[in-house]
Image (cartoon, rainbow, N blue to C red; front, side):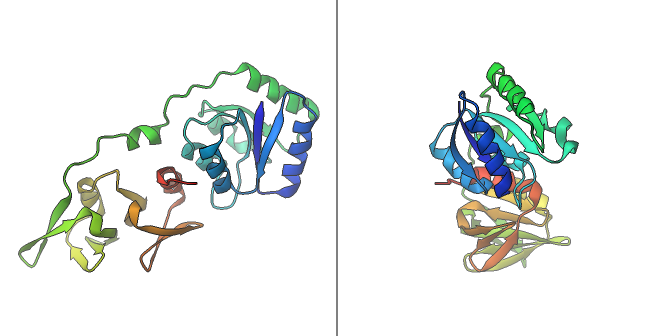
Length: 238
């Protein structure tokens, strides 16, 4: 089985690499300290098994699983015992290894991986993103008794401001008396994404992503941890 290791700790990657090398049924094709780089790799390559750490900076193992499409078999590798119940809510996870890992326990995990079949049913995120696209290209807002048309494509982001919301476009800012939730209902889901309780962004306007924020024009928008997986799933990563 071709496999990869994803762990931000160099020593942990080295130990896992040695365990894999000792098993003639396994071949380590890549090792990653960063989950984003692993996602890029999986967009271009197929593997049979992933050894995945849970606790990584800015992007957890569970975030990673939710982001990739049709995940292969996954063995979680962690020093934290507290996520075992949550782990097995994911069909792709075949075992849960707690560090330090013994040779015997590792071999049992490989046996489980060999004997377990993983479904390729699309994830909830993929299903949600597969909704039919809206055919309307604009919406209207009421400003000083005037109805102003705004093209969806011109909107950079929408920010909640108490009982109001600010709509920031390429050229202007509009403050409207409306909740973020009501505006979100009017926006096409294939173009816009709520990345924070106070922000909805136009994903086509993203210039840069760093840690838990995105850059749109000159504005830095925070991304909550609960929304980051879906954001990464939207991106066409190379």
